[in-house]
Every structure is written in C-alpha cells, then in structure tokens.
Length: 496
Image (cartoon, rainbow, N blue to C red):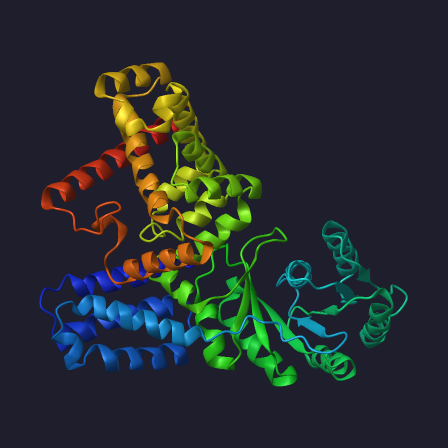
C-alpha cells in the first residue's frame, strides 16, 4: 500500500537529514523533493500546492531550524499535515429511525457490489440485521453476485428481476425489509463506465424516494485523480456522506487517498484491503500517515491480530500473559498464525521501519516464510520440555550445538531463535497483568516512540536505552549477514 510514495517521501526526508547543519536554503531544496514525491504519487496539484505551503511555512521557521533535531521536527510537521489532509473521520454509521437506509454508488469496476457485502458484514458484526438490495439493473451479473454474497454471509438479499426501474425495486425493498424485521437496508445502485446525465438522474430519483441516512461513494484507489474527479461529480449531485476506497492492497500510488477529502470535503470512511468479505477497515488518517512515513501502524497491527488469530488460542495466551508465562511452544504457535498466506506481508507494512523492506516481503511471498517456519519447528522440536519453557537459562553453548545438529541447522540459527524469543518474552512480561485497554495504550506508546525517532532498531530490547557504537556495529553486521543468506537462498531456488 503506497509503497512508492513511502519510499520517495522517506528518501526525501533522509536527504534533508544528511545535510549537516540545516539552513533555510537546503531545507527548501529538500522540501522540493517532498513536493516531487507527492506529485509522482498522483496527488492533485492544488492539494500539493496547499499542503507544501503549510509545511514550508512551519519548516523554515526559526523554531525548527534552530532546534536540536530539526529533521525530526520536520517529520512531525509532515506527519501532522498528512493527518489534517485526510481527516478528521467519523466512523459511526449515524443510523436513525426504524429502518435506516445506506446507499452505495460508484462507477463500474470500482468494487461496489462486493463492498455492499463487506459493509453488510460489518453492520451485522455491530448487531444490525441488514437487508441487501440488488438495485444495479445495468450490469446483468450484479444481481446474481449480490445473491451469492448474501448466501455466504447469511444475509437476505432483495431483488426483482422483472423490472428495469431501480426506484421501484428500492421502494419494494423497504416494504419487504419492514416485513422481514430488518433494521438496515443497503442499496447496491447502478454504475456506469463513466459519469453521465442518465446515471446521475437515476441516482437522484433513488435518493429522493428512499431518503437514505448515508450515501457512500465507492471509488477505485488505483485510478488516481480519476477517483477524485468522480467523487467531486457524485458529491455535487448527491451530497455524499463518505467515501469507501477499494483496492488499497494493490499498487495504489496514494494520490486519491490524499486528495479526496481536500478536494470534495468528504472523508474516506472505510478502505477495502483485499477481496475477502472481511477485508474492509475503518480509515484512520493518523495511522495511514504513519504508514506513509514508514513509521508503521502498531494499533492496526494489534486489531488485525485480534481478528485473524484463533480466538480460543488467544484466550489461552491471554491467561498465560496475565500470569507472566511465555514459552517457546507459545512462540511457535504465534509464528504459525502469522505465517498465514498474505498475512505476513500485511503485518510487515504495519511494523515501524519494515514497510519499505521490499526484499524481505518478496522473500516471504516466495515461500521463504514457510522455510523459516520449518526450521523454527525443527529447532524447537529438538529441545527438551524444560528447554522450551526457559531456553535462555537451560541451554548452554554445547547444548545449542547438539540442538542445531538434531534440527539440521547451524548453531547461530539456534542462537537467533533464542534471541527472538527473549525479545517477545520481554514484551509479554511488560504486558503481564495488563487489561486490553492498558495493552492498547502500551502499543500506542510504542507507535508514538517510533514517530519521535526512537525506533525499534535504535533501542535495546525491552529497556528503552540507546545502543552503544559496538552494539550498532554488531546489529549492522547481523543485518548484512541476513541479507547474504537471503540472496544465497534465492540463488538456490533459482537453480532448481
């Protein structure tokens, strides 16, 4: 998501930080690179112009230039202005009355029908009884597609195949919804390949007759400024309440997400991040700004873990966390959950400093994750029960060599596994006895720490202390060693 924008922006900000003492001249020169990054990401020129004027006014001020850490202050300014550009956002659906209506509109190909299913699933999770309405009579397969989605979600779908008037279908659906005991109606309206007068008149008629509480426009995040232009046209005709941006898991450059609120005044409320029906997320400008600047998104990472991972297993781990217990068996189970197809890449983008790790993400997608998991299982299975409970205290160097021989790996891989376990065990120990809210607060503090420049790689694990020069050199050596190992494995795979 926004990989190109992230790489270009972080590169521009790094170039400013590498100038030594900052002056107004080289600060302005660096800010031109920031502006170029936004333009290349297909952000609306008027948005870029206003955004850069605000950032420049703050960045070249005396307070920033004479501060001890001007580059960190600049990152903070850019981060806050990105938030202001995309927010604020109210995620509540604002549903009132006995049978409220949500109307979805958009161009063909934007993912509107699938988004209807995703939104219905979300409403059902929030305690609603939705009714889906197949009012897209332009695309022949739209009615069948919505019925299939309804069956998958166990949500009723209303359709009338013998009429070509969407207003008639929608009015009949409202009457049917009352009879069936529904407390929410979601209308899937017609789209076109482009905006035309006939489409707008049809949507205006549905809007007048059904009087929806919320009107959401579904836009394709990969269409760039075309998405913003269509949002403006739909908003002029219907007065939109929000935008749902789809396909942000693809090669979206980010221009539409950064432009749509500023141009139309309508916020992005939800984003589609995949084809599955659970891949609809609330849009948080502060978290998105953190991802764009390579600072990660720890809060979304926690929420994803709560959604994706087995709930019974999580309850068991919850109990162990309350007791301050964490073993290598627990560590292995967590790694196996994370190794679900596609999940690792999503989670890596939310970890501070990992969003731009393209080589590692490519390795994960090519099967490297499964190979690493097999090695991890082999190492842990070669240990005794006592060693799994507390490997740091019970495994000496001689024993580590024997475990490595039994697992068919090198001794340093056993050492690396124990170090990784120690790091996670340290986090679990800090969170032991804490409730869900307190752990979310701790996660938020980790996120803020990453934004303030005290990133994970700059601190000793679990202590918050700065690394010494010797420790930094050692960390750099380990990273280079890992890169060589990745290249070697890639060569071996290529030769098979």
